[in-house]
Image 1: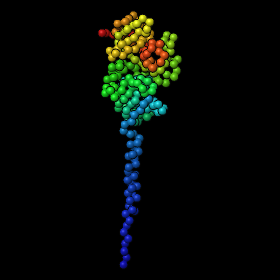
Image 2: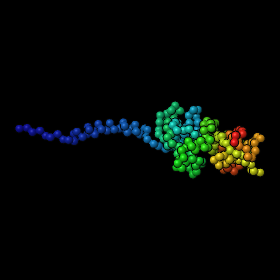
Image 3: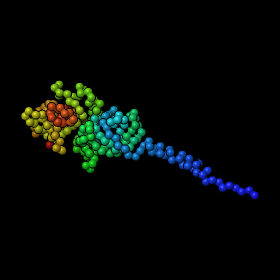
Image 4: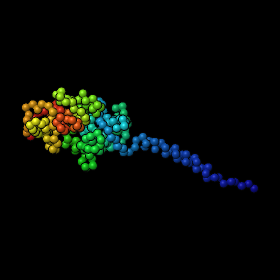
Length: 234
């Protein structure tokens, strides 16, 4: 009389595990390629129609998504997702939220911080950023070449972070000091350049290059090197 030996259950476990692994691995690989939410921090620059971000370690992304109000030269921290290259020659990054707009190179002070609860679009509108040119012709790379930057009628070459701005406010002048512009948001900047026929008390719109990180600025603080000035209705 013959007897059958019971089949070992361990002979089935191996193939089942291998099959399960084969089903799981592709999904995990796809997830790793495009994780949910990540954060990037670095400087922005314009390249044709593309807005690029270069992180501090040199990695570069082409931005898409919620980028309105961001400008070349900005130092930012952004929240979003990795995305395919939008045709700019670099991995894409879909911005879902602007977290921080830094006012220095060392992450110590800010122009905008989302922790205050204000949406970036509200800040950008208050700051007049929707009137500025994204491809202002200046980018962070040029900070290393001060001779290429606008100068103070040949007497001073500004250095440091800079961007094109258009601001509206009231002129103030003090004897022996640079004229200043005070905006409706109580932002005060010095003005370097000709005011034409405008004088203290006039409401004007000025366009130029804002330098706000030059420790030796002759006007002693944030300064707009003027390109143009015109009257603005009260």
